[in-house]
Amino acid sequence: MEEMLRHWSFTRDEVLEAIQRQGVKFVDLQLTDVPGKLHHITISTKYVDDNTFTEGVAKLDGSSIRGFAEIHESDMLLRPDPATFAIIPWSLEGKKTARMICDVYKGFGGGRFSRDPRYAAQRAEEYLRTLGYDVSYWGPEIEFFVFDKVHWDVTSPYAGVSYKIESSEAAWNHDGTSLPIRFKEGYYPAPPQDTLMEYRNEVCRLLTDYFGIEVDAHHHEVATAGQCEIDMRFDSLTKMADKAQTYKYVCRNVANQMGKVATFMPKPIFGDNASGMHVHVSLWKDGVNLFYDENDEYAELSQTGRYFIGGLLEHSRALAAITNPTTNSYRRLVPGYEAPVFIAWSRANRSANVRVPVYYRGRRGMKSKRIEFRTPDTSANPYLCFAAMAAAGADGIKRKIDPGDPVNEDIYKLTPERRRQLGIRELPGSLREAVEELLSDREFLSPVIPADLIETMTELQMKQFIDVSTKPHPYEFYLYFDV
Image (cartoon, rainbow, N blue to C red; front, side, top):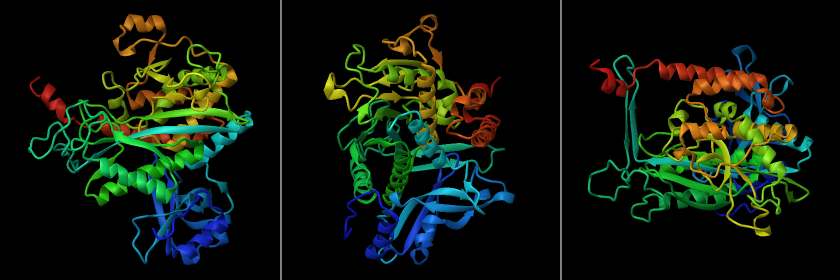
């Protein structure tokens, strides 16, 4: 890059100046649909001016975006956020392209579009401010897989379906040219077993140098066949959701350039760990972390933090429809693979779905005191996930919901009777169950996520649930062909 862009919160004027100075020819306008997929339209920079930011770009047919609009109300505007301006590093010289993430507006002066997921994130931030908090900080741990190739066949569902994963790291690889990783033994292996170190280095370089996303570390995760994690430094709610979408965008493109494929599907591999998105959160006011209390002997956690946990636990079953929004999500939420099946809280206990990290003790740990919600997975729309978590935590604070006693045992090893004694509930076992929970417990979301967005989202989810559940599975032939 011939001239590094040294700061990462651009104004409108700075964007217009950077376009000229950098010789940018095109701008990608990016938006996110209700399920969380990134979309884009590319415009010539000849048409980017002040009106682009104040009036928006009249290029969106909302009826063609999942969950957005009916055909009779489909004219929409994209208004780019200049703070998200970044040069796309793989754009060709002479065709240099930048990107900006957009807010979606209804046409004909109709104002913000209520089902724009980014709007829900912005509403959540504003809601927390009305409750007296200056800022909330968010840090998702986004896991994913990088495979050599994936094949699947659903072209003839009447005759059968199939899939196949190829990976030089895989435990089922027997070609003698690499060192396969056994199931559940993929955590921190050194090269050459970890074949993706240079891939992750490149992702980190591009995230930092071109998109202004500060990266703490990266590593190979527990599962075989190329499970990865790259940790971004925390940020405020909407900015972190923007970064999560950018993270996925860069991971996919770098994999493609290296002849591989990256997927954020939660559970692509049977018999090994799935990809989670553990989300860390804290609330701040006047520069003070409101989750920290040096006088709390258990976890140095404040009463405000405990109430926030109470809200997460109270609404965990309903939140699952947003934080774990696919049928595949519930193949992750089973015992035995480090996924948080049980609704409980604890310090340093990864078998509970809410954990309070306790790496440091005393004032040294004040800034990093946070709550980790371990339920979400990587199929979640980050805008809706963070917004829903904020609403649940805020409800806990407003209603002073006591989270109960922490559970300091390995919940996976407890008997059902012992779990009942401790009042430990389970997360939903299917997408349908999660949707039903959300529809019966959604009032807490009303300050941040509109009812029409929830209804649209759950309609899409139930269609997917029916699509999957009504088709014979290959393993059913193994189980039932001889009945």
